Amino acid sequence: MNQPDILLVDDHEQNLELLEAYLESISSNIRLAKDGVEALRLVEERAPDLILLDIMMPRLSGFQVCRRLKGDPKTKAIPVIMVTALNEVSDVEKAHDSGADDFLSKPIKKEELLARVRLHLPKV
Image (cartoon, rainbow, N blue to C red; front, top):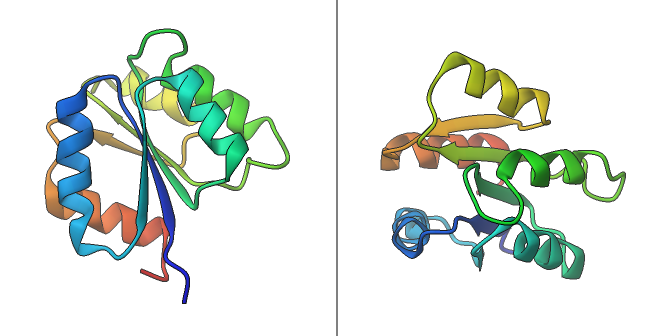
């Protein structure tokens, strides 16, 4: 059985390290991107099974990345979980309007993260 491919996108190294550590218990291939431009390049190289996407990033925001992914027939089915410090109702609405499949607010709780990942990757 192939391991799922998970792309973590965040411009802060500590956040990437934390997410990666939280996901250790899930047998998966984890790739990292430090901004939206790099994330889109990695998706083009090999489409992941799930993307955990920060919103507030330089060059391209998570909203912009998500809209591009969901607007492309080749990538629109990839589940995207927005992971952000933003937590206003309008931010959640904007995330869903950009095509996000789910939303997690920072600080991330490990149990909640794992539950959401398993929801969107039922084979793990």
